[in-house]
Amino acid sequence: RATSGRARDLSPVRPSCGAMRPAPDAAVDCDSPGAKRTRVDWPKNVKGPCISVLMPCRDAMPWLPDCVSSVLAQVGLEGDGGLELIVVDDGSVDGSLEWLLRCAEALEERTHAGLGNQTTEAPSCTTHVKFASKSVGHAFPADRLAWEPDKLTALTVTQVVANARPENKLKVLTVHAFGPSGQGLALNRAFQNATAALIGEMESDDLRPPDCFFQLKNALRTHDTWDGVTSSVKLIGWDRPGMSRWMEWQNSLATPELMRKGRFLEIPAMRGAGLYRRLAMDKMATTRDDQGGGAQNPYRDLWEVSGRVQDCAHLEDPDYKSKNRIAERPNGWWPVDADFWQRWFAENLTAGKLNKPLYFWRQYPAQSTRTHDRCGLHRLRKCKAYFLVKPGGPCYGKAVQVWGTGDTLAAWTLDLRDALVTRLKSTLKIGTEISNELESAIRNSIQPIEYKPGAPVSWAMLRAEDAKSINAVLALSQRLPETAENHGYDREKCDVPIRLFSFGMEKARQKVKSTFRGGVDEQ
Image (cartoon, rainbow, N blue to C red):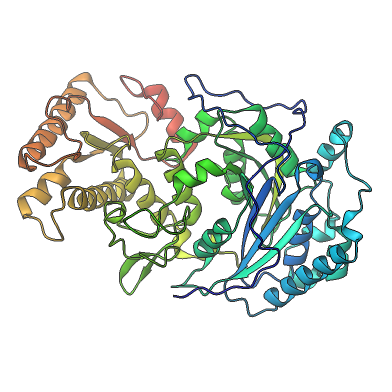
């Protein structure tokens, strides 16, 4: 479980983001009504990078050199200190780590030789439109967008160094993964070594248009109520209609409010496409110990290890035994992306989205998004159930109805009930064993209702179902300990059930919205 690492350019630097250029004209959606106002000061004339880009890496050849080059070649940041790309390798056996170390050494040699002070081809504000046009999809030759390894000749270290902007830096670290994945652990290690006030991400087989971080940074400057900003995503490589439909839906969530509402349907944005304020990432983080000391860990990496859910990104407490984490112990495991966005919105953080493809996501048959059990629909459902019933979630302390049909209805009901049982055990400090009567009362507070979109629902049926749900919650509240704090169930406020409609297809959801008696409020 110990971590070890080698680094380049790890001298401590004060976080900064430097002086900002005026934002270019862009079609950016405004904040949602009632959005919180959190003015963030942007320090100027402070030495250091304005953006830290975090990149986990494991066996990323032959795409890794193109990926690294696309980040180190970012333009528009030279007046603000450039960026630092922090790559953390967690056990590559395909030569990725060795290539990264050679690249870092060559960049360092270039700087020492005095070649890092060149200022040619640095864009000014007036050249922004030129680079923005490249961001639409013409920044890379067609052969660099392939997914077949045998069709891509990796860039050499010499080529990457020649393309790199002198103000952009590379750090290389390593970690030893705990459990089956090192992704979250690598991201946390990179974050702990980041020095900038803005945090970006990058997957080690994807590409960035040449001015993407310039545009994202300016969007945060313009929208000071946004805690982070993402962009539309362009798919490259293996073309499949199902993934294209999903990405079309995700890209359509173009406002903070649409992203917030969409989180219980699917992942509302690609996390790696974003740029986040450091203060927001600090809010997401958990500490090493109960006293609040130690390194910050904003990422979780949940897996089932030896029959028990563990956080493989948190070496000091993977089992959630510390007092400040025990109540957050999940009852399932799911992808890092899904977990990140649910926790982001649970912390009342806001993210905007630029309607421009500033991230190129490479598709290929063997990627974990398509093949791994952790990314299956059943895992995503457990994630959503966990956050629906946790404190602050829309279903916590409420009478809950699940409207649906067949296996989908049964699965949603089971996962919500399991999540609520786990939640109340930890909140009430009941322990691992509870009485059969109390567990039955907890489960009955979530009622399944067989329903097909468009089926007639009378007011009499609604009143009967609502009365059944309210009585179930009142029965639960009477069984909960009188001295329990923060369990969320108020006997005086259980008269309005929450209705969840478990339909994955957009056509079915639209039919529910247009026909259901009493209307539907999308949360």
